[in-house]
Image (cartoon, rainbow, N blue to C red):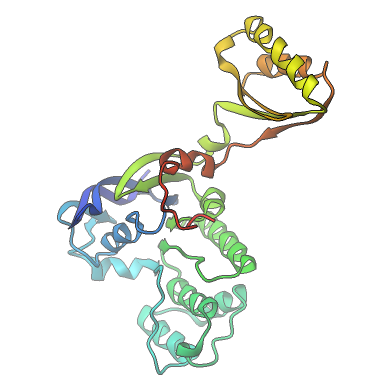
Length: 316
């Protein structure tokens, strides 16, 4: 499959450990690629280089097989860009801004009307006085009005209410079905998980993991949460548990992961025989609850960030 975006050894060093370092990734035609990390991790810096707004200290960024910095004027004709921070010109109404962008981007009125209706946006009034949500909607219309082949999205739903966030996610899914290539930078887990084919996690300016999004849903281990009716039942199960391990194939793949009062979590590999053996044992006890804890993208992400103490609520 053809690579629309190809980044090789991209480095931009601002000093004191700030910047991006040795970034390598590709985005194939028709793919939705997620770029996940907290504020300050290097997501926006990477995007500015993809757009050709900044020259790398080292490495190369190719978009449509052309150097993004040298040929950014040519490349921008085929890209819809939604920045993380919206800066709109003052002294214009929303309609005046849309008409200006329509003429610059050679967009059709039908496409503009579709976007305005989709995001329930009335572009009346001065851009300076618009709410953050309306500014975001106006930027969405401007980014997508010429129906670009490639979408570069930096924190695209910032400022949108939950309803509009879901509308945007559905819109991205529709654009994917139409064959668009999408680079989505975000710190919102469900937004990335719901839309992306592949995901890269960036930390301190370096990519620490890259993987297929579906691999999260097919994680090797499942965790089951068991709540016993009383502490005696829990203790009885704990006494029998070693025999369960001993009598089960691949015994080392099953273990009690945590115990708290009358709550017990048991982690087992995705193996029907192991799960069935566990259920047979659990059935002998008085249990109030037995449910699977789903493994999520957030769970995987926190493996890389769990020791950090300065999130500041970024991922809430």
